[in-house]
Image (cartoon, rainbow, N blue to C red; front, side, top):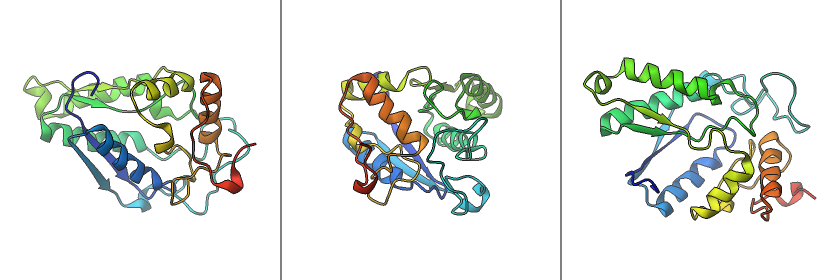
Length: 208
């Protein structure tokens, strides 16, 4: 919106443990003036095996382990971006913005710049719009920003961080656990930015 785009926001309900993020996205989309906010719903059974979608797999609370963590959701960004691509073509939109970050993150392979470049190349091979000259551009404005800069940017743009949900196991009210990888990375971002942590934590798990 800062760049003058008319924004249509898409969220996806894929059976994620942190379903509270969908409500947060809807509230922010309305507050910030998106033209529309839609929620696409997928069959959650195809995403089993991830700690974010499978009740039998626990979210790690003691820090990241070597390799790709169990919070990785199989092919998630490819599926989410494909849904966005389909809607973009219907809207005749030529830009897709995604919040992937490859600096302070958990090591997911589908958050890397080279992945997003590859998806963009695929999008421009696979769509009627691109073949007719309306190329699709994948934009990831947070891709190379440390979390501290993301915190500062949110505040500069009038986004209240307290309204956002990052926690891998936020409760129904959107309150964070304070212990998972996402919470620890987020908290470190506030500390590095010199900004008071505005995250809403569940009282029993509030970091000391």
